[in-house]
Length: 633
Image 1 (tube, helix red, strand yellow):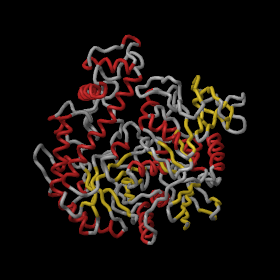
Image 2 (spheres, rainbow, N blue to C red; image 1 turned 180 degrees about the vertical axis):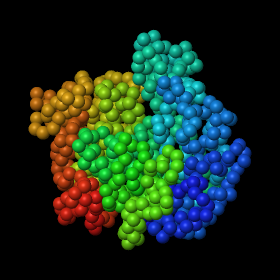
Image 3 (tube, rainbow, N blue to C red; image 1 turned 90 degrees about the horizontal axis):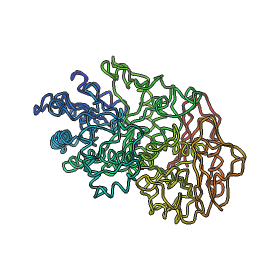
Image 4 (cartoon, one colour; image 1 turned 90 degrees about the vertical axis):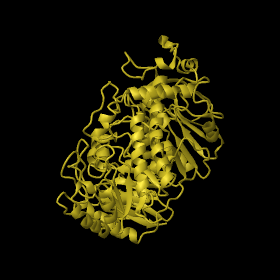
């Protein structure tokens, strides 16, 4: 599969007389793909029923005439102002009971059936008009589900849909009361109609209620996306995609991915460093113009799993963005590095956001490949360099890794519902594990919680799986791979209850968690040897062999057969010790990489990436700042 490049273009933002020059210039730059249409509903339908497709027809023809392929987005992330006159109750409501307002984007509630039907209508009309076009190479549904904290809605529409969802899940109100433990604090319900959404309670709501609402909200996103995908698929053979985001865990991306052919995501390394990466100030300062060395790679691997192998970067940062707390310019070379890193993880395409910087509205400070005056921005030269390089490069390929890492959105729902310690985050626990493995020079496959066959892997890391279904427990116990579990493995049943027998309750693992504690950030618990337990710690009753202990002799990491249990949140030193030891035993080759250097293997090449702002000596020689080396395997 050839690696390709693209960009995001908004013909409705620019005079039609420059479209042809733009298209020609895109093609000359080596771009293949152009995404259009995803925010254009008000131009497609300026008033109800008054459909204006002609400008899109002309834009598609102009772009296609230059040899470009189109990704056509459904415009449902930006309903026009007249839509609110027709459906004034379609707005999402935040947890404080305040309705969202018009004047930005994503101003809808996933549960509002009237708006969903409007989406069905516009998507069907779009599919009918363009399904036979040879120029439409792919579709995109909506845009960035959950962006701006829009998954959880506390509207009346959500309340009604939640009650319906509860009836389908529990069958009877007595079953719900038992599952949620509503005997506590006299919280029993007489009927499903009595159940409100879990906000505005005097103190914290029942965690089972909160978890159910989070699962429901995730299912509403899945349902919303599925409606669009089914309409598009009924009319078109072109693959369907959605552009996910970084560190967004409030809906199950794997389930949305089940209705797509391609998973894409929007990669903004420097914006994410300031906005979404938990790290010390000196780390953020060191990588302020490069982005975190592991954050993009984690999401590349995640969305490769969501897309079942087919994935793109739909929006790649090409310069400063507008939305982070600080928005510096990238170091020279970083746009090229980010692009090649995506290709190293198996991306089919990398598309830059956006073609030309907008001189108006909310994103006018967001750089594009062109400046507002159409002069080239620095990112364009780097994109053109990549285009020349991929013309002679091997096809995109991935190789199965020896290490798998399980990521479970439902576990994130549970941790978010009951973190037990300020700042405790399932995502961060998994990301810390991923970072530790990457620092050892390892390539990693991220696996969904539905995985049952681990053949081909030597090591499986599955931290923080709050609830482990019985089938997954059996798969962990029966695999030949070494499986690293904990902390909080099996700590809750399916309805957020503490199970008996006490966790983790895995056959063959003689471990019982007898007590748990969350730890202040300024009270790390030192291990014998190097490293600490931070944030969260469990006391164990066990006869298993201790791999690591606290200085007082309490076991932290223990092993029984192929199962290893980590009874605490290890810092990077502790995780490095753990995985170095296991990889040595399992004959997985590791290397101690210099700070800021990362390695990724494909089926044919090894890539070395230097995220630092200065040259670094590596086993393949000195790699300049913000640069990479491709090495044939």
